[in-house]
Length: 573
Ligand SMILES: Nc1nc2c(ncn2[C@@H]2O[C@H](COP(=O)(O)OP(=O)(O)OP(=O)(O)O)[C@@H](O)[C@H]2O)c(=O)[nH]1
Ligand SMILES: [Mg+2]
Image (cartoon, rainbow, N blue to C red; front, side, top):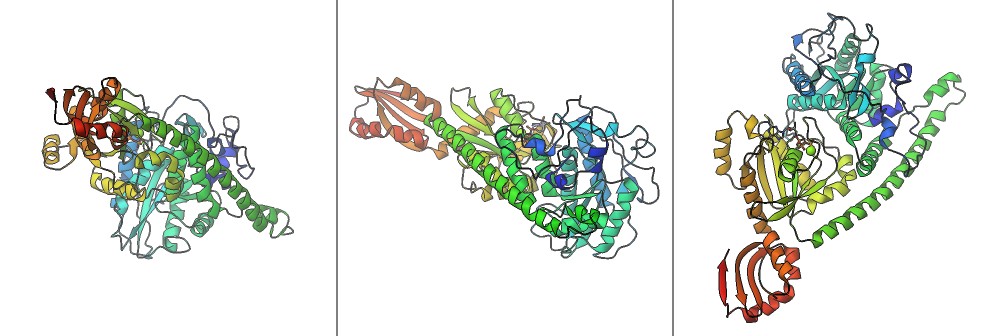
């Protein structure tokens, strides 16, 4: 993979052998670095600024890895990123579905499906490795060949996604990280093998595939224990890197982190993940010296762990100050009593597109996973003059690493402090229901389940049956159909937000003195005014207003009681 944190321990040989002039690989992760001056992303990545050319062109064709070593999928030169994502995903699922079902440890000859080649021969040998350096998120990454492995648990009752669906998503994640997925396989298991996660026969089968395809990274769809990682790496041999879904997601986040806050959060998550996984990377010294420094590897791990723990401590402190800063900012924002609405949802559901449409913001929205890591808040001004603040934030995914949720606490607090959550759903996605459940699961982990919610079925323009969907949504409570891309349904969306916000507000009757005209106009902007009456002593307002704002009106609410009987004029809103 382009460089997951895991890979820091074992830098892929190509990084140092090839193109050393093009990139700076920094395997020196154990050196404590200055938090103030270090860009954390640099720990893992090489950056160059080359024009973006990227696509995987996969077809599908059934071949056994052993029977044709020229049949290798290659990176084409078509500058169409979207196709690459879809193709790789579809290819993998086909590969999975058509694989002959295998029982536990019954290791028959591997029967796998792989992607069609677009070019004859091994893509390493003809023009060197140049075409496998791709630009991803402004960084040049080496497009390693990846092989995906899933496990179908027999007691898979709690999982939201089937193993095929999960594996397909893993392929999308791999593509987002800049990997070239060459094939995938799975095994049906009652329980994972504690040593190697999968059975020994499957390990041998994957080894065959590694040799046939020239695989550089094997990615497992579930989190592996440190021991399993080590044993698998040993089993697959020297240069093959083994990693899991968590490491892959952490790597994507690392590539995406564009602000200091995001970089800090990702670095913390990576280090927390890495700590128990430090391996004996110094054992080569023992071998070189004929065993004279025996035990050195052991000691070095302790040193590494200590350094890593220190770095984690420094990062936590740093993040705490970021959090405080964010909180102050939020408190200042709360002083302006505009309700805060947060967009939540599965990654790629269209949250940023919706924010952009409603506010003219310029948040990056693209057909890739985890395009957004940092929250953005913008004011939405509705046609009727009402306002609310809309916050776009990081998307969720099933099996979201706990280290990430913990590290992104500062960012995710935005969500838990909102008046209303807008759950954006890609309704055209075949797994929309499972994605909804996955998002609800994360929301409950964040203690945000009790915040009022509006369900937004986005991308209706892309769905097969838009009219049917709209009818269905009409019969459901708090559900709106929109297309964030073409803007349809946005008026209904704003009305629904306003209605839902009303539920979160409190009812007040207040007599606002004539010299507090600005208060009155704020009530109109942020609240739902039922009536205004002009009396001798001021304007009598009956309205739903945000709780914070109701507190501001407390003194006027007290006066109002004595003033209620004598309205001089009445204005229906
Ligand atoms: N057809 C169609 N595409 C949409 C719609 N809304 C968003 N998209 C596309 O979906 C892709 C993802 O959109 P984003 O707005 O980046 O999604 P997001 O939820 O912010 O994704 P993350 O930041 O990764 O969590 C982009 O290619 C959008 O153009 C829609 O209503 N219809
Ligand atoms: Mg986004």
